[in-house]
Image (cartoon, rainbow, N blue to C red; front, side):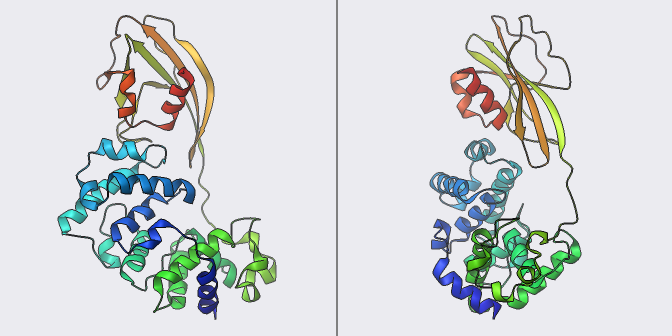
Length: 330
C-alpha cells in the first residue's frame, strides 16, 4: 500500500527537473554530485552551466582542475569538484559509464546514495537511493528511532527501502521518495501532513512524534576560526597563492592569510577594510578581517605566491571570502 500510494501521488506531483528528462548517466551523475548539500534552485543553475561547458564526460575529463574549480566556484565543498574531474577520467579510462551499483561505487567520490541514484535513474536498476528525504519519510512513517547516521540505522533503512522498492518503476520510486520528503515531509516544524498521501498510516503523525524523527546520534561540533586576509596591491598587481591540502578550500587561490596572529609589516600601513566578516560553513564559523596594503615595491613573500594583474583575478578559482573582499574593494 505504501508504494502504490506513493507512486500515485508522484504521478500527479512530480517535480519537473531538467536531469529527469534524460537517461544519460553523465548528466544524471553530474546532477547528483552538484545537488549534494545544495538547494535545487542553485544546483539547477550550476548543472546547466556544467552541461554547457562540459557536455560530455570526455570533455570534463579533459578539463584542468582550475577550469573545473572556477566553474564550481560558489558551491562550496570543493572536494566534490576535484573528485568530479577524477571520476570523469576514470569513466573515460573504463570506456564508458559503469552500469551497476557496485561498479559505480568505484568512481572517486561516489558513495552508496549516488551509485544507487545513477543505477536506478540511468539504468533502471531496483536499488534504493536513500538520501535525507528518504530517511525522513521512512523514519516518520514507520516510527523508527534507530539513528540514521549509525551503521545499524543505515542497514535498517536500506533494507526497508529495498523491501518497498517498485521492481517495475525503480527510478520513479526513488524520485517519489525524494519529492515527498522535499515538498511535504520536510524537516522540523514544516511538514505538510494534511495533504500527504501516507498520513493515514504514518506512525509519527499518529503518535505526535514528527519533530522527533528521524534521530541522529552524532552532533558535529562547530569550530570557530579567526582569519585575516591581506590584499597586497603593487602597480595593478596583487599577490595570491594556491591553498594546499589538509584544510578547507584546497586548490583555491587567495591573498596573504594569517590566522590568530598580528598582521605582518609589509612596509606600508595595512588599511582595515572590514572587521569580523562572518562566513558560515557546515562545521565552521569563520570571522575574517580584510586589510589592504598598497605599495610601489613588491614585498618578499613566502614560496608559492605569484603576482597577477587585478584584471585577471576572474581567471582564478577563489573561496567565497576572497570574493567578498573583492566586493568591498569596489
